[in-house]
Length: 461
Image (tube, rainbow, N blue to C red; front, side, top):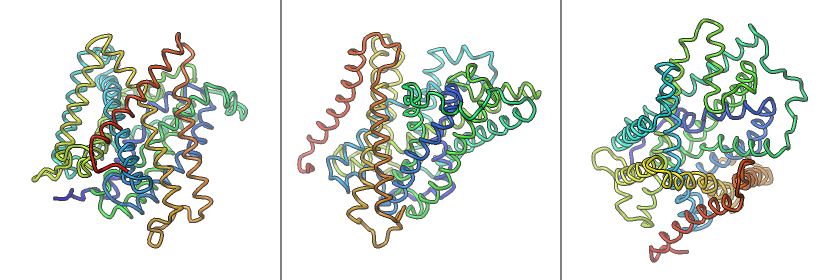
C-alpha cells in the first residue's frame, strides 16, 4: 500500500509558510536595532536562496518520500542517509516541547493580557502541550486528506499576522512618525560584532524549513512541479514577512522597548491602542496560536516520515514502515513519535534535575539540527557534479560554477551557524561545563544513531 498524494500547490505553500516563519524571530532581531534589517538581507542571500535552489533541484532529481534522507543516501551512501534522517528526527522530538511552551504562552492573550500569568503556569502549559500534541497526532493518524487543513489554517494565521504587522507599521509611520531614527549608518553599526554575528546565526535558523515539503514528496501531487512552485511562492512570502515585519516593528516601537518573545504582538497592540483598535490584539493572538499549531502539525508530520522511511529500509523495525489500511498514514511512526515527545514534555517540567537534563538536550539540538543541512548542501553539489538525472532535470541555476558557489555559501553558512551555537553566552559562569554539556550531548545523539545503524546487519556501506 502506498501513501496517498493529497497535497497540491496551495497546501504546500501554506504548510511551508507556517513551518518556516517563526514570528518570535522578528521580535528577537528587531530588539537588536536597525542592523537587523541588514542581517536578514545577508541571511537571505547567503543561506535562504542557496537553500531554495538546493531544495528545488534535489526535489526534481529525487521526487520521492524522505527528502534530505533520500538525497543524502543517494549522494553519499546508506550510512550518511540514515545519519541525516536520524538527526532530523531526533532534533524535532526535543524541539516540540519548546515550541509548545511558546504556543501555550501566546494562547492566553486570546482572552486578554490580564491572563498572562496563566501562560507561565506549569500545569496549564503541560495540559495545553499534551492536548495540542495528541490532537496533532490524531490528525496525522487520519491522514493528510484531513490533516492538511491544520497546515492550511496555520499558514493563513501566520500570513495574516505578518501582514497585519506590516500594515500597522506603515500606519505608524504615516500617523506618528518613526519610533527609531533610521540614518543610513545605523544599519551597519557594529555589524561585525560578536553579538550581531551570533544574531545572524540565529536568523539563519529562522530561515530553515524549505525542505519540509520534500520530506513528504511521496504525498504531494506531481512533486517535481508542485514543490518548486511552492518553494518559489512561499519563499517570497517568508522573506517579505521577515524583512518587512522586522522593519515595521522598528517603525512602531523603540528597539529598547521591544520584548524579544512577544514583540510583534506588542507592536500591533501599541499601534492598535493609539488607533482605538486595541481589540485586534485578541484576534491576532488567536491567529498566532493557530499559526503555531499549524507549524507544530507541519513539523510533526514531516518528522514522522523519517522513521517511516527508515522502517521501510529496515534501519528501524519494519513496523515503522507500516501504512494504515484505512487512512493511508504511517500510523506506527506517528504514534511512537507522539509517545517519545510526550516523555520529553514531561521531562521538561517534573523536577529540577530532569528539567536541567532536558534543557541540555534542547541546547544540543541546534548543533544536531544543522547536520542534515550540511548534508543537503553537500548533496546538491555532489549530485550536480555527477549529473544525476541531468538529462531530464531542469537545473537551477544552470551554470555549474554558480551552483557550486551557492552550494558552498549554504554549506559554509551552516558551519558558521553551528560554530556560533557552541560559543557560550556572556553570562556563562563555567565555560568548560557549558562546552562539555553541548558537545557531549551532540556526541550522544550521533553515537546513538550510529549504534542503531550498526545493529542492522547487511545495511552497512
